[in-house]
Length: 139
Image 1 (cartoon, rainbow, N blue to C red):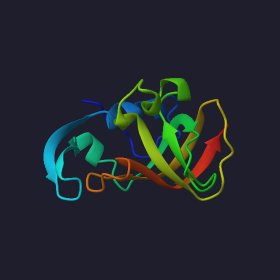
Image 2: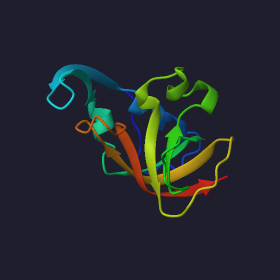
Image 3: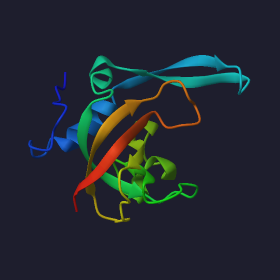
Image 4: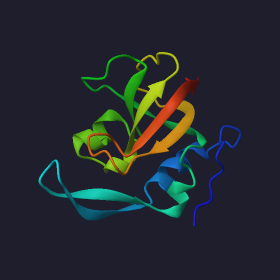
């Protein structure tokens, strides 16, 4: 089992392990009244649940997605754009929504963010992970 500290910025290399922990999920089929059919709902492992509402530092890539209002709201991925979930190269557990305190300029290179991780297994119109009060910590 992977053990991850909640504040990882002082432990070099551990930021990458957050994505590994976030991949520890399964899915259950559940009928959705609004959609009118069964959907896959995430079931978070205990290691993922332990990160809910905790401050984490995570390395990843900013994904340019239409519909996000500003550089304060964007999609963050474990993988570069060419390999991310939206291009079919990875699963939904490899991306998260971000709400940053200040605007974060787009970069094709990996960046480090710190913020409070929120889990979502209820709203199918949102991603299953969200980083709030996020700040850029490395360029």
